[in-house]
Length: 309
Image (cartoon, rainbow, N blue to C red):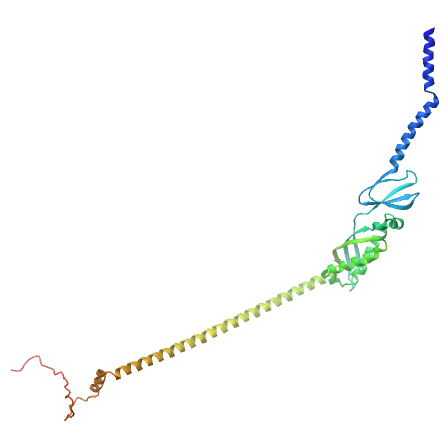
């Protein structure tokens, strides 16, 4: 009997400890902790690098948030991310040149949002700035730029065309707080008729250039022949002058030699005697006078090989 009463008492005590109020209180505490955790998580936001956060309070853009960790109200506030990195858009647009030639241009444009006007961009364009503003203005700027050049100049003055296009586009997009960093005109495509005309012109210019080069070659070879002929003529004249000079020098030397020989012989007694002998007619004079000696000449007389008895 005593044991039964004791058991009932313990059960009554346990039932009294987990009363309905206490159960609800514990449940409320747990629910508050969970809700607080979710609210804490909802209030903690992070803006990644390369983006600018737009703080929306009940849907109205009120402030911008730089990359990093931020606390916001979990109810009534949210963050919209605006991409502040460099954007690249490519397009292929058709336009007309100054001489009314149809040209299709492939272009690439690099741009970025002005971070100091992110709120204005969001309020006016949200995140649709590329489709709503950038691409239409690219088309307009390209038409304006190509209309300033004739078709052939679009090719030969590509850098000038590119600079003109960038200046026009930069001016058009500046009112939307979009900065143009660089543009690139990658290709020009013309009609088949124009391409054929260009090819024919290039072919004609190449042939004219070949003819000019051939003419220059002929003129060069003719000039070389003239130079060669002049050189040979000068060489012949120089050789003739040298031979003439040589002949004169030889004749002068011979004459001088003869003069010297004659001078020497004229002063030689033997030579003088030789001249007298050569001038003698073979007869002795009938008389001879003077104080000198009688000249004696030895005249060879032929002798017989046998004597007469």
